[in-house]
Amino acid sequence: MSDTTASLRRKIRGAGDLQSVVRAMRALAAARVGQYENSVHALKDYIRTVELGLSACFRANETEPSSEPWGRSEGDTIGAIVFGSDQGLVGQFNDVVADYALEQLGELQGAPAIWAIGERVHARLVEAGVDVIGLFAVPSAVNAIAPLVGKIQLESEAHRALGEYTRVYVFHNRPLSGGLYEPVQQRLLPLDAAWQKRLSEVEWPTRNRPEVLGGVSDALQALIREYLFITLYRACADSLASENASRLAAMQRADENIDELLQDLRVTFHRLRQQRIDEELFDVVSGYEALAPTILEKHST
Image (tube, rainbow, N blue to C red; front, side):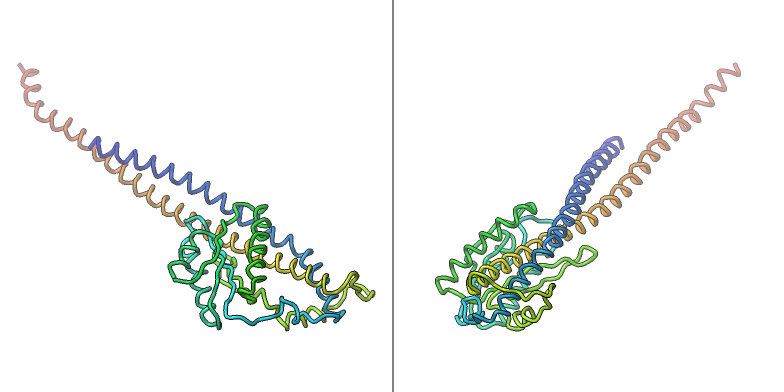
């Protein structure tokens, strides 16, 4: 019995230590979710500025976007960027986005050439037998997103300049409420004609007619690169927010499970301890009853 209670004490201590780790990870995940969501919100003014610049270029109508490399869609290969995770404790996070990307790419005409962001989603895509031409590590902080996006753009444009593909899609998980997420896709290139038309018709915030200085074509290309950068940045931040929201939900479930385990262990411990006390009391009473006649006989004599 002594060994059993000692074993239960060790299990209770171990569960308590594990719960401390889980709660620390839960707090860290919650903090990171807020950081990545705030980084997306902070882009709103800059996105608005870039869109107004594109609107001015489209209004100028001195060059057709569809005549630029950004607007061509020929070629048999499709470039794809898939954001996943490098770490575990995220449930089906990588499977969901990988399966969604494979399903959507399978409906398009052309063979996919994929850039994977994260070792786990990379392994899932390789297992599916698709051509994964690059792997990038997932950023560990907000200030690491911009360097990653810059690397992706450089690599992507280098391959596109060689004529390997002109169509580019991005796939990632987008956060929902309650620690949930959903996989989404966005076509980066060629530029969407409806999107260009919508921007060209945006109401200008002032009465002064916009004017593009230094050549519409150069300004348009620079602004499109900024637009693509922002789109990839937002996709990466959304993916990281979804990953940490998924980890937060997993840690909450783990915390609840540990609470239930600790409750069961403590109930079992107290029951065994009480059982041991009862047995010791029974032994005392039994010994007294066995010795009582002898004690009474000695007193009577």
